[in-house]
Length: 186
Image 1 (cartoon, rainbow, N blue to C red):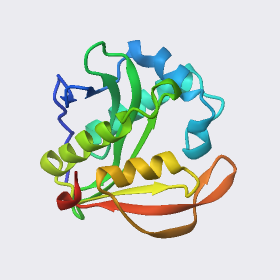
Image 2 (image 1 turned 90 degrees about the vertical axis):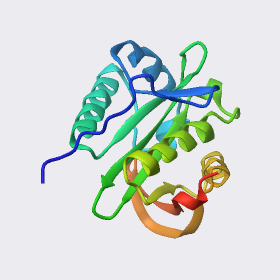
Image 3 (image 1 turned 90 degrees about the horizontal axis):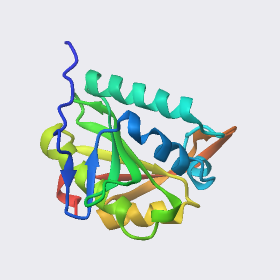
Image 4 (image 1 turned 180 degrees about the horizontal axis):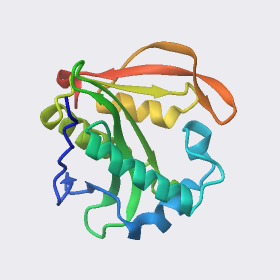
């Protein structure tokens, strides 16, 4: 079976406060600036140090995932002025099982204002309604309190601890498994 590319609206998705859109070349400097914050590689698999080459690699991987129908990485931008606030994505979309995973980050200067929750809600709704997802998973390091609060505010349910689940940097880390079903989305 050949891959079915993901079709994402050209205007993106918006709740009036944030808008999700695909990344472009003009976003590279803002992405690099945001991801250089040490809190992002602390809890994610984003490389450290992070530079323009890393952002361009992410952009190429994003395009490949869209074409393959497996990944939908988006930027969270301000709905009015378009500045980059963060990113949210679904990964490893498997049409046969209806499962995928999600991830997000927010620039340090924009944290604590609900942008991750808003972006995650918009993208999860799109994944359920348009991509056939039936279960979205998050894997969150137990020490990442901000991310845990975002997951729970969005409606994700904690399922358990996955011991030594994922390498972050040079260390295998425990992760808490969270899941969201269509009926859970707030």
